[in-house]
Image (cartoon, rainbow, N blue to C red; front, side, top):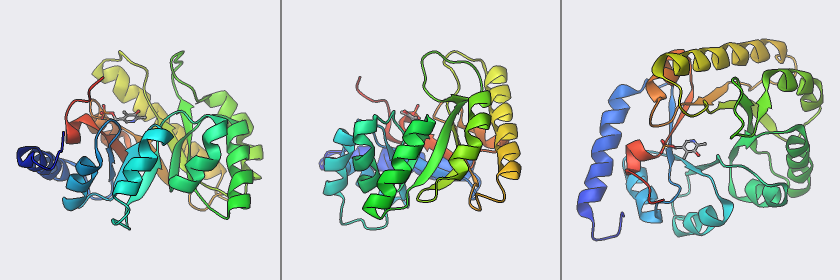
Length: 232
Ligand SMILES: *Cc1c(COP(=O)(O)O)cnc(C)c1O
């Protein structure tokens, strides 16, 4: 996998990214999800112009980040479930955290950001449809938490992150994304006096990014479409 000798895989990655770039409006940020892929894969995608990379496990990401530390304009996004005891590490190693799934975690990130003199960008992970397999706020919980989230001054709350439940068909996926986009706009209006940069809707993965873009996504998170299937 992206070992130094696999020139063909590098060019495969290049071809996939070139195709994607024709498919994606320039206003949409393409995040390359490099989980379970090597630092050489990151480097190959970087060479094709990508700068945003996503990882879902801190302990896997940190050594990989060190291997590409010479690429100083990389932007790292944390997209996995964040345990509170890893919050400090997440702030130290990532510019963005997309998976802020509770008020408690948001408050902890705020406190740690003050202590560490960091200002991470956060997305609030919201479940617009019920999903027992995923963490995140449901719409009611999120709406109720807004006044307390407005109090957090050491983090930049930038938007919402959405993962549809598994097993939806195209039409259901499309409706899930439209519902998310509506919620995003509503919160954007309501929060305008508090959050000046609430401008990102992180939704869309390899299987559904076209529907996500059509619904108004601003960041898509693609792993397999760029790097190929992951080993389990
Ligand atoms: C793994 C993962 C992705 C990328 O999934 P692909 O199907 O490989 O595109 C995107 N978002 C999150 C939260 C993920 O965990």
